[in-house]
Amino acid sequence: MSDILVLNGPNLNLLGTRQPEVYGSTTLAMIEDACRDRAQTLRYTVTCVQSNHEGELIDAIHAARGRHVGIIINAGAYTHSSIALMDAIASVEIPTVEVHLSNIHAREEFRHRSYIAPVSLGQICGFGATGYLLAMEALAVHLSKGAA
Ligand code: DHK
Image (cartoon, rainbow, N blue to C red; front, side, top):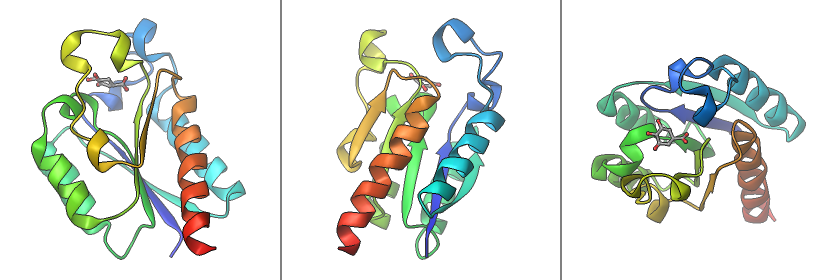
């Protein structure tokens, strides 16, 4: 098993045209392609899922058990509100890295709190689309330690 789930939450399907001054001009399809390329060099494969619905994100996390060795998640605004997503990640016990394109700590106060962070290996934010690739590297390092 060597597949990583790249999970994107609400409004991230609009990347490229959505507030490019905050989120950049890279589309989600471009980010997913870049993740696939980077995964290949790291000897992993990638499955990409995006949903605007909290329950679908939770279902994807539940379904990850036995299918994916790790999860990279940008939960969008659910980051700041969803105890249910936090519980789902904690329940499946799959190494998870949290990503945000923007630096959520330099933005409005309500974005500073993440319910995903306490159940993640770590959080990468503020590096735009590159953050997903940094997350992939971090996950691969973590998984290789487990394998050693
Ligand atoms: C994406 C969102 O949709 C926001 O709701 C978060 C995050 C930040 C990002 O920077 O990728 O607050």
